[in-house]
Length: 252
Image (cartoon, rainbow, N blue to C red; front, side, top):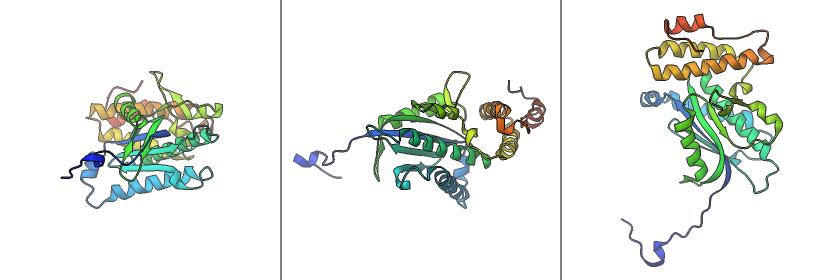
């Protein structure tokens, strides 16, 4: 036990939180996978997801990858980018963070997992030991209490008009990141197959099934309206859903 007295009772550091863009992400339903990851396959896939996402989105904006803070603990991911008091790169930094988060979401969906989270702007501090700040608390609370389904809520002011194509509005008027805006040309095939397979796997789990059905509605909405996919008209049909979950009530 360390006993402190006199001046030693006070910290010698003068740390302060500063302004950051913060993303807090949660990969859904992988607790049991981690528990049974005897060959560390999921651990290495997780590392691959992150390396690919940062590599694909980070080039050209920052001189060093170190300017994007990344921390992974279990199935949770924190990404943070510091903002200057007057930051001429603000819009670029927002775009980079949106790209990275969307790439992670899509990469995880390619492997049959779902993710939810939140992106905020707020006070944040990190060093080799601590991650701390009001912004982080807000992001965690949004992910746990508001996100509910596999979406990335966005609570930052997007000043660049073009950036609004990155966002969509849910039925409850929440803005969330339009992750499919960043997917590859033929990802819709893999996404469709994986979502139907998830329905087959979790057809008796009402809570998980609701999350999958929300993602299917989002999938159908995006790919139906996307100009890039107007010829293919990819869609998960009611018949396909019925076949996967055996007469479960259809997504509306």
